Length: 461
Ligand SMILES: Cc1cc2nc3c(=O)[nH]c(=O)nc-3n(C[C@H](O)[C@H](O)[C@H](O)COP(=O)(O)OP(=O)(O)OC[C@H]3O[C@@H](n4cnc5c(N)ncnc54)[C@H](O)[C@@H]3O)c2cc1C
Image (tube, rainbow, N blue to C red; front, top):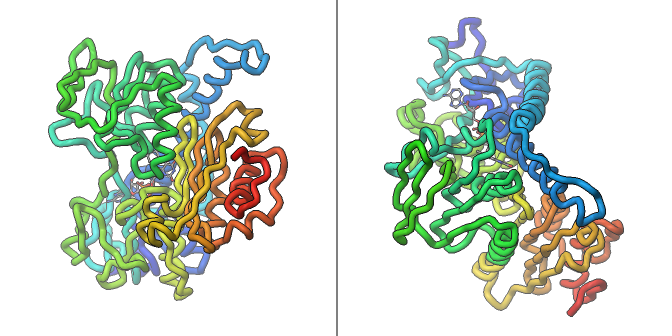
């Protein structure tokens, strides 16, 4: 059965976040007739409660630090305080502007936007608001939600990133449960805003998915910033009352704070949406696909956070583009998951792409790997900014660079070149021959490749 207008769409996309709207826009660009079903706001988590609002907070945090630290640069400035209403107004205006732009874009590409909660009722049909929307292809893109731990109920002083983004005040103290990307970003913001912050992480390091050298460097930097953390410690429970939240650890210690941020990962939003009934395989709620993002059922594909792997907006965008092109018969090249750049926007920033040193040794053999760490202390622009950190390169001996790992202020902006190097399988000697502008932080990438190619210029041995 088609929708009430009798239309059978080329693609019906369920979920209008990064993955879903990218599928819709690329599909429409390729001349396909696309329906996009969204129960909340077009743009999804990334735009409304993820990437964009958090990075606005982080930018405000950077300004707060600059005001506080002006005297280091001979600038008379003082931080008088954080006006959260003003910070939120700025954040909301950024989100609002992008939201308006996205709505206009979807409209201008003639994508049929259907508002409401959809459910897969047949392999080619989604039901929404009692209406049946039929497609020759269906793309599942329903995203993710903030997880908690068993017995830890979200409410009151116990919050997730969703509530953290809406706070109308700076908390006096916060315990952040989880030292992954979201946890360390909020820890960084709140510390800059003046809160006392303690991170609790069960694994042995903060940002445990990164190369261990970056984790250790972040831990040193956080210690210096006065951000407390406990690693290798398991959470036991939390209670709350009028005075605060009381977080107990398996070590027997209790930490009291105004708020507990639960940042223990994100689960797939797939429950009750009819996926399994149509034969789609779920593993702990995640949709299993092949490398072409096909579910193995009829013409059903899946993109974004519901597909196991890195939960990142740009991965979702790329998967969306891929699936639209696949449906259009363009046979696009598959996406290499390890070539997807990763940035953690705390202070100092972390950016990486490709294999960690440990992984590279596992994949290519322990003795087949060379690496170099180039200290940002030798980089003029980093010195000007007053940042420390390093760039670590991992290469296969006599072969390509397979990993770029960086820590320091603004290094997120350097990952563009890093990902070209790794994904184009450049050898250090290739990159060493390219000229990097002086003085830029980008130049540090050039220097690191010079070092790895055996001809360091501004490196102390
Ligand atoms: C605090 C935070 C910070 C983040 N920062 C970054 C960052 O800096 N960089 C980065 O790359 N990633 C970041 N992410 C991750 C990024 O937001 C996600 O990877 C991305 O949003 C995933 O896109 P998606 O399309 O899979 O899902 P989502 O963006 O979650 O979109 C899914 C959409 O589907 C809709 N939906 C769900 N069920 C239905 C239904 N039944 N019917 C209709 N519509 C439905 C939802 O309303 C939602 O709009 C961050 C996430 C968080 C929480």
